[in-house]
Length: 560
Image (cartoon, rainbow, N blue to C red; front, side):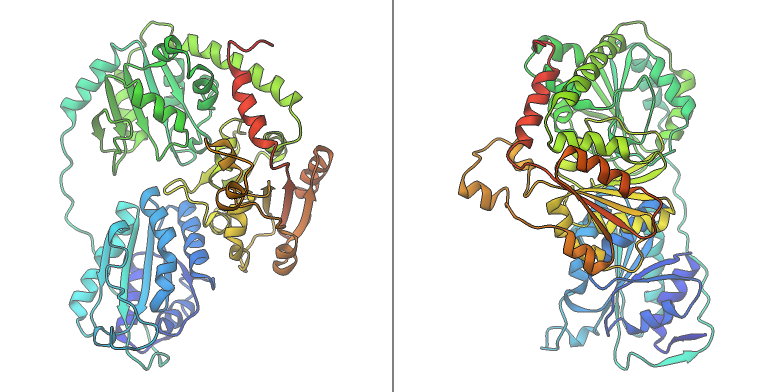
C-alpha cells in the first residue's frame, strides 16, 4: 500500500483510521501532499476533493450533520485554513463534530519571509474544542495530542484542529503498512448526582398549571413517540416546536410566531401565555418573538436538557440537566402527573383560529414570497432531506406546515447565509435521501462555488427564491425605497442562476408567476436524471407588505 514517507503524516492517517474517521474532505495543495497521498491511497477512507476551502468545510460539516460522526478536513498551509473558519464556527455552535487537519511549515520557517505561511497555531482559539499543535520529531507528544483531538471531536461533538508541520520533500512515498495504534480513551469521570435537582424539578412540574416546552434544533427520531404522546396530552402543557425541531404531534404547537405575533400588543393575552415552568431542549431557536416574550414574561423556573451545554437565553435559567432529552424523559415521565387546567385547551383554540386565518389569507394573497413558499411546501415530496438557508427562508418556513417525512436542517449555529448550499450537498451525500435545498438569492449566490463539486446526487434539487436582494431587510424597521437602502442594506441586484447551472451541469427551470411556479415545481420532481434547480422570481417591493399584512390578519381583533 502506498503511504507518505514522512512518519508524522503516517501517524495522523493511522490514528484517524484507528478512531474510525472515514470521511475525508481534501482541498488541493502542496504542503498537505503527504496527507492527501495517504488518505487517497487507502480504501478505508471515503476521500472527497473540493477546491474552495470554505465550500469544502461546509460540505464536510453537512456530512457530519447527517452521520453524527466527525469528518476530517485537510488543507495546505497559509490562508487555506482561514477559509474553514465560518464552518468551524457553525460546527462549534451547532455541536457538529469536525476535524480540521492543516499542513504547516516547521516552526523555524514561520515569520521569516517564506511564502504561504501564517501563524497557524491556535488560529481558531475562540471557537474550537481542542487545538493540537504538533512538533516535528516529537513522536510521543504528537501521538498524544492527535489522540486527544480525535477523541474530543467524537465525544464532545464539535470542531478540533490538528496543525501538522511538514518539511520538504513532501511527495516521497513508501509501500508499507501504516503503523497501527490503539485508540486512546480517557478515564471516565463519575457523573454528577442530579437526584436532588430531579426531585425538585418533578415537584414543581407536578404542581405547575402552566408549563411550556420549547424545542430548538433537534435531530429526527431522537425522541421516542411514547414520550411525545404523554407531553401532548397533558392539559397543563404546551409544546412549542419549530421546523428544525423535527417533532410532529397533533397536540403540539408548530409555527410559534402565529401564536405570538397576533397577541404582542395585548397584555392580558401575553400574561395568559406566560408559563410558570419552562423546559427547553435542542439547539438554537429561530423565533425572535418567543425569545422576546420569554425575556419579558419570564417563567418562575427554566430547566434546560442537553448533554453538553445550556445557554441562559431568557436570563432565568434554573438548572441544566446534563443528559440527552430521550434519557431525561425516560427517567422523568413515569413520575410526571397530569395537572388539571385550561392552559393547553385555551391555546389550542387560538391555534385553530390562526390556522383558519392562515388558510384564508394564503388563498387571497397575490404572487409574492409568501405565496411561493406556500406552493413550495405543498410540492416537495414526503420523503425528503430538506435543507433551508438562513435569513428570510428559515423564517418563512416557520409559518407553514411541514410534512412528517421530511428531515429538516438549517445552519442555525451562527445563522449565517454562507455555506448553505455546500452543507446541503454534503448532507445529501451522507444521508442517501433525495434532498432539496430551499434558499434565498443572496445566500445562493454567496455560496455559488458550492456547485463546483463532483458529488451532487442525481436526486439533488435546489429552489432559489429570487426577490432581487436581501428581502428580509425590507421587513425590519428602517427607511425603505431609497438609493442608500437599496445599495447598502437590501443590495438590489439583477442576477440569475441560469448561467451557473449551465456551467456546473444542473438542469435550469424558472418561474415568475403562480402558474409558472406550479409547472416548475412539477418538472423539478419528475423522474429525470441529474440535479435540477428552480429559480422563482418574486416582486421585490411587494413581499414585505404581504408578510406584514399576514400577521395583522391573524389577529383576533382583525375584522374579516
